[in-house]
Length: 63
Image (cartoon, rainbow, N blue to C red):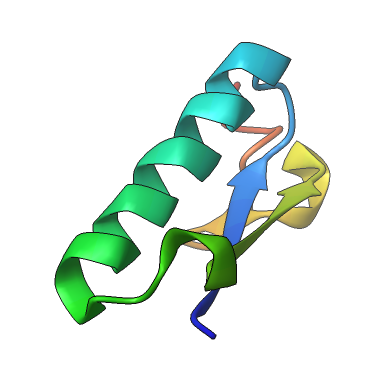
């Protein structure tokens, strides 16, 4: 059972997250031949203040 964890800065729409789940699922089905009903995808949204890029929070960078 393939399990994918996706970390993203919060703020994506439900439609965008749905698209990520669908596309990651399809990629795993194609890449490893897993049956679609065995693929699991978890999206974890992280506050921009908790995401660091080059020593600066994404929030401070305006992301």
